[in-house]
Length: 249
Image (cartoon, rainbow, N blue to C red; front, side, top):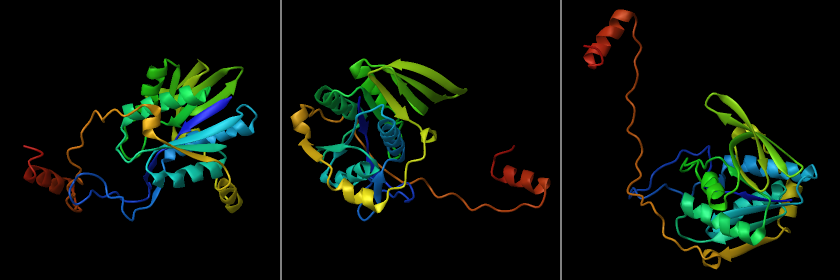
């Protein structure tokens, strides 16, 4: 069984995000970039399935500029067998990403596609669902546990009221929650071996997917600074303060 894992290069979750001076995007110059945390959970799950003998190959896929090779090398060091970069300098949105993954599914014929439930840059949480619809495959989103056996996947997923367990016939699409696992720490020997693993680069045009983005980004701005708080001594002062701020009549 082959597993295709989609990963995205994002600003590291520990970095404070700032908008660019022209308000047209997020500042990435000189900023630490990393693999999207949710995608890392999906990749860890795929590698564990291979280590358990359930999967035979794990393919990591990224979309974007040549700079994405760093997160693909990270994926190879974690245990992916090979990596594929769909190279483009254009902004790729969720629906475009799903269409690119569909083209890669037709090219690579995986039995399972995994990704994070969302990317921490846009928080869209929609690519996996779009891909499942395009492929007409069963899907399980927000997965916190994944077991694969006998051509089926048993997935425990997070829902508003608790948890839900689904049984999916493969091929299928699964998106990972952070609760799915704890990604492994990558040791130096794994990093060195990752340099010897295949990393293929193809142009986006080779997949026949050149559609323009359907959404236009108008402006990116930081939220207004919050007012400093103050300590009140009793309820009477609190009521007076709320009335002064027109919160209470």
